[in-house]
Image (cartoon, rainbow, N blue to C red):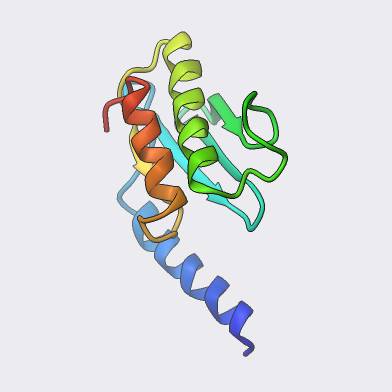
Length: 120
């Protein structure tokens, strides 16, 4: 198994372990993060209804360069998803880091969402 495949398998195992106990409800939907090498994506998901309440990514947020893979861009993504979630009537969420370590860009999205008014 090469290094990239091993990293993907480890992340999938961490993700499965976290998702066993975590579920987004209408009262407290799940804020899910995905980070690729060049971009970062965040969405607020109601798992019971199976729908996305709000989303933001480095591809669609103003003020974020086309290379959205840095901490400053991630913080703006967090603020944008918090603003869009509040418009949809969501104030509290469950944070799903999606198997990624809680540091760097993932932590920046969480901090930006908190600054934007979401409660974890």
